[in-house]
Length: 400
Image 1 (cartoon, rainbow, N blue to C red):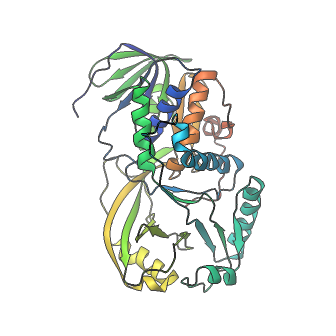
Image 2: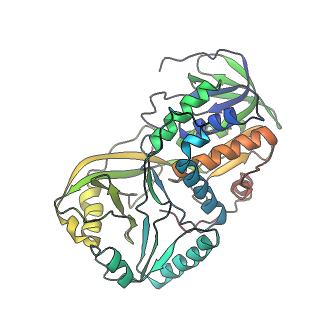
Image 3: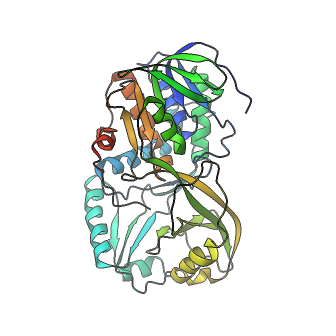
């Protein structure tokens, strides 16, 4: 990386990480009429080749068990649906492609069926269109499934499915820059702070940059940034595998993102299909470890999808990749908001695979915290750093 020095020696906000989270915070700050400060985004990988953002599957769902996560995704759905409006009605801003094929959680035990029913009641209470379907109802709507052993399904066709997150990310960066945000290819290697406040950040290129607020948007590397102020963060890189495949017998309708009891998920992807899963043994990995497990398709993914959808007995993989979750080992939920002591150090970390769909609401929330000292549009405080300090997980049962 050719390191770029910033144009100035001081900024009101320094955002560490310029992928989708950092760029969301940058754009929301720059678009907030009540914020008139300067913003610097420091990104160590300006190609974004190794970011979680680049390896996303770009899905969106409201099927969570907690109000705050449901409402975070509902804002994302509204933001994507009205993307051009949110970006100032600029006619050059494209509409974002969405494919609302929905999610389908399949339960093969009464215990999980009870969880899905309970979650559905919470979701319905906040206006989500989730329905619990019997095996007969699933078969009528999607006759291609093998439903042996399935107790019920949880399904929602409204504002759930795929969206073109790459366009959202690209235009956030463009508009943030137009609004005066500065992006540099560089790396924060140290943070000068006392027990209450950050004073400056040190860059790999040698500069010391004075700042009013620091935002940790460093993805799977967030723990390294947190340690610069003496904080521990339960976030680490975990590897996830994705496969794109063609089917010899394509289905006659769109395939919801189906979460099989095996842990494998599969969905439509244009005219092809996408499947993915975690490994059975799921350790932390090195930040630069993107090696594929070439056995996981034959040993886990293909057997699961061929069992659940017999038409997938004959398929051909056309693309595959490994990406990293910024995995929150405490409770798989985002950590957002200020450090409990160093008050101008703000987290937006540990999305555990939910980041792309949560980026609009979390970026908005960080913008509000920096500008007003509080969350105004949606109270994100249940997802704050305090629960890490207290070792009190914020449990979310609907984790893939």
